[in-house]
Length: 383
Image (cartoon, rainbow, N blue to C red):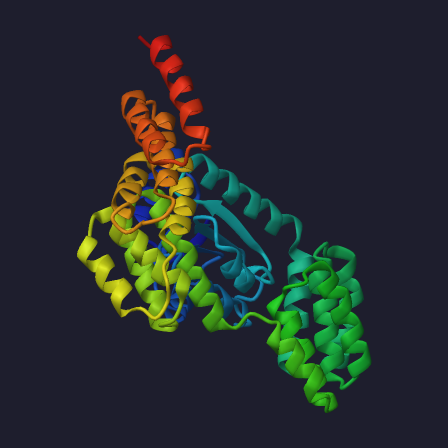
């Protein structure tokens, strides 16, 4: 029997795992924990990290902390999460022995990943032991000893990026700067945006006394504050596409706490308020902002993504309320309203919006008439 520690898991997830375990009569025990100290007490074989709030970075920082702890540096982690944003993925992309299972929780996929982890551990005892030994030697600053283990580890380990990075860390510890940079070149050729490799490159330049190159590397490396900001904006947009305006508002508001001048976050909140019909709030946002809002551009872009996500009602409300603020190119919004309703198979509304577009459009604008004719054909076909 093996032990599974679930970290920051919701009550529903823990319940689902217990039911899954009972139904399939699986030979493991699960324990819910919320801190490194509680993990120590549980003495698990595997770890499960539940990324309940992907707009925050707590779960990712927990995984980083686990990998920095010698006791857990090679312990398999099952990571339950929605797909991460590109910037958030930078925080975990360098981490080893992570198995991903998508949310929402599906027992079949969970079972498959557990089997995969079990098999990996059974088949790779020597690899895991050697990898842990290297980390221990690095921690103890016994760099020559770590260097001796690496060739044996390399024979068993197909994570070539990590081998290059470990060799760079060893060479850095031995003050062999040119060899450090050479190994980092190999590592970065595999993962150009690796935070670990780029940070070590900057540190190497600084140690060599080349402040200019060190600062150049740091200037092009994502900072934690930037990752937090861009991740929040990503989830503000994603929650909108889910139809969850409350979560979207919270994400954009949190982004503005990091950067009060973020144009993307301000535009996101305007979109949320337009969808919810908070016209006075939008007016206040415009009056209090030093930035200009291109409502046609904002609404066209967001409306298209909402329609693609089949959030037709939200897209319709966005377009309708945006018309209260748009003075030029109004016909384009009416056309998009028609296209939205056409995609939703509400042909009567679509026809009305296309006809309104035609009435407001310049004489040489042909798209509205084309859509009117096509929609009328669809209406005849469905009668």
